Structure formats: C-alpha cells, structure tokens
Length: 125
Image (cartoon, rainbow, N blue to C red; front, side, top):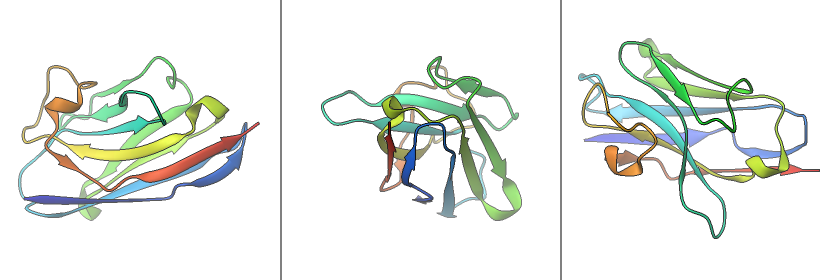
C-alpha cells in the first residue's frame, strides 16, 4: 500500500506560479510510475503530467511548456511546477501512482491505483 498526500495548492492570479508537492509513504520500496491529474467541476479527470521510473515525462498539450514534473527519490516526493497559470487551469489536482514502473496510457486514470486527496488550484483572471 502506498499513501499519497498533496500540498501546495492555492489561489493565484493569471500568469502566476504554484508548485504542488506529493509525498508518498507506506510501501515505497518498489518503483511506481507517478502522475498528476486534475478535475474541474463538471468535467472529466484530465491527465496533466507523468514521470516514469526511467525519468521520462509526458504532458498534456494544454500544459506543455508551462508545467514541469519532477521527483526527489530520497524524499519520496514528486513535484509539479506550474508557471504562467491560466484561469482554465483551475481544478482540483490529484497525485497518482501506478502499481508498476511504466504505464501504456499515462493519461488514463484507470492506470493508477493510488490517489491523494487532492489540492485545489484556483487561477483568477
């Protein structure tokens, strides 16, 4: 079992930045593919970014070039640096981990079995 806990959400103006963090605890001895998802009210969950155990990253088209995912293995933490935020980035952001090192469809929530409680990001215009 792996427990995930996000932090770092908040309210910013458009053009601002936020950094989300996700700390993993529990059985972190194995390597897991980890990612970030977001869900806005009335919308389906959207894959934002992923980082597999080989260090390969993938991003949603809507955030590529503005967001950066990273991981600190020593601290069992993954981060999502979000720059140039837009009102359409407003959502609850979730940290997720798969049960294996690589997933075929990183953007598919069904590929992940561990989820954090979510942290709210609100971007005002």
